Length: 376
Ligand SMILES: *Cc1c(COP(=O)(O)O)cnc(C)c1O
Ligand code: SF4
Image (cartoon, rainbow, N blue to C red; front, side, top):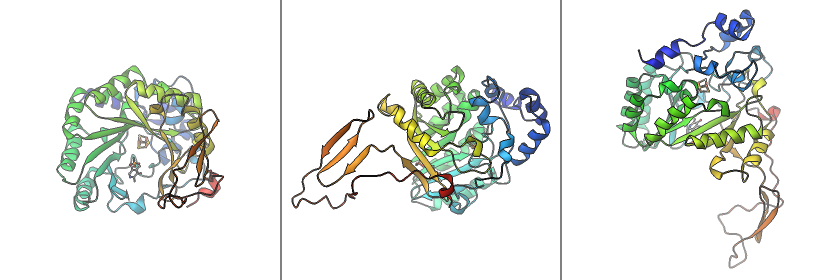
């Protein structure tokens, strides 16, 4: 057994362990665990400084998860876009490929908690069917290997998936989505990395939500991956009491760049049942982008997106930098709030170029949907 597998075995998985360590009612823990299992690696548990802190809130089972007041079990309507159990095919040229039900630790806000941790829903025996689907669909050029967490597979099983995908001619790029560098960085070994780099072009999106998660151990793991030529991106979920603070988010994005990870997305928390206590208003995300764009490196600015309830896919949101657009000029606001005018190109008959949509000025963003309106 590898070191990382031993470390994983030492995780907090029993209600008694959690109850004792965090001074919780054991019956409460059992009730919550029935709804969505828990596991916390010893490494990640050690990052918790006190009850209720940003690390704790992401990972320790909370009775607030049992609240019935809002949210849905499959907020992104993934099951509707799932032609075979291991595939979600929503966009024209790329698919999600679910290859592992397991995660190193279980995020309480997980959007796929209806499936994750449940081997009857995501299972290696569905992998063949997924591969067959990808082989048949020549329009697919990009496969996002996900789960659960694909890095919970053994090196051999993961290599089988990568090798099988690489053998498909129309597949251009492979991506791995993983929270292992955050939860169990010890799993990123020289042996794993050596195997991964045989399947380039391979990208990896990692998942860090707080600057305290970028430890020396995590930096070591990310460094190994980056040295293997794997471009690293980060996906962050905006969470109440975790990172709903522009200063914290800016520090996270800056720190990611120091370990060669390019911020990719900040997600508005999905409308998942039992996660109301972790959701923020959408305006918080816009405030965060305002606080980063221009004030620090452009490389540190991810896209803020809502994965639309009902299966609309990822929709980007930007603070209102465009004040107005007409045939003659565009009025823009910079990060300091100062206004600037950009003259439009003059077309011969003084009409806007045919292919550009022209909005009526002033441009008013209408995108702040409150939860009640987000029903699909
Ligand atoms: C997020 C997602 C993708 C990848 O989206 P990108 O914007 O290309 O990163 C693909 N398929 C599904 C179903 C997704 O949810
Ligand atoms: S690591 Fe990803 S898939 Fe696993 S519980 Fe967290 S959000 Fe869900």
